[in-house]
Length: 439
Picture 1: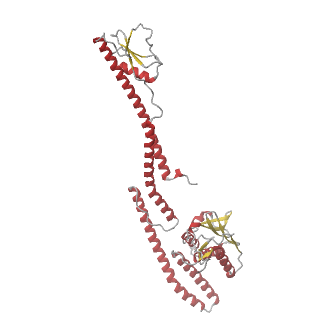
Picture 2: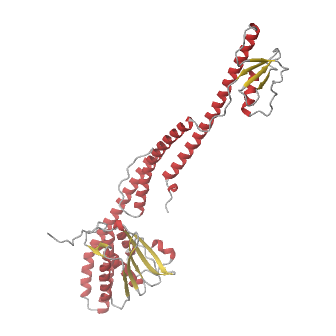
């Protein structure tokens, strides 16, 4: 099951959203704290200014009345508030800053709770308490317009960041898909070189590597095909001369060796051929039945072959490709396996399966990875005359050329070789519907 967080885009998105959320939360908390401090400073400045103005008024115009909310209260009056050591923290900060702004030894208190907020101030030179109104030190509201603006800015930043992460992930995704195709020996078109400089350099290096591997593979195929083609004529002459030999025992031995060499040459030619198969597309079930019937008839000894063909008429492959796959697998099964040899097809939820298995000794577990490599002969279990080590390599190449996957394993508790080929529905050739006939 694919998890979105496992992808580069998912992790970048998670990182971006987390960083933006943390930074916006810190910014919001800092703004709230700063606004609270600004409110306290403004209240302190206003209260100190009013207290100084009252003192100037008392000193220079004692007969003039004071504003209605400003009072002078006798220290002996019963309404003088007590000092409140248990006052809320914002109120304590407010009183501390007021005392710092006023002369030393100045007393500063706040009015009784439940009434309009007032500041009571009395310095050593003051005869009375000076009572002035102050702004209410209300804590910031939990939700205000700042939260709305913060949400809008956060959403815009997240969308911009996700778009940037998507732009960065796209080239990497294209490169990952190309690497997967290259690992499956499928054609790899040049990957567009875009993104950051390091990514462009990586993509450029990958394109150069693919081109170099393609040139090397093409040179090897041309050389192999040329050598195999040039050997066919001498082998034909050698067989003709062997047929004219008088010694029957020697003639049979030479003919058998020539046939083995001819089979190897033909395997070289099939392996070197990497073009598109343009032969007729046939039903796999019907073609498998015909090939198995032909092998039964042509076998020099009785070989038990079974078919389990349940894929249906929708499973179709090019005839030449299918014949090469079956001939290589059945030849291997007859040479190295043990009866019964089973050819089976089936339809799954994602595509079709073609399977060839035998009941022989199989392949050792440590050799399974090398079984489909070209020119690898797994002696002594899977060696022999007339074989070049290309049979399973040809099968795997043909299957992948048709968009399928090839799996080689032992299906009977460590023995009994099975070659399982899976073809997805989208990789199968589309056959035009001719059932309507001509008009």
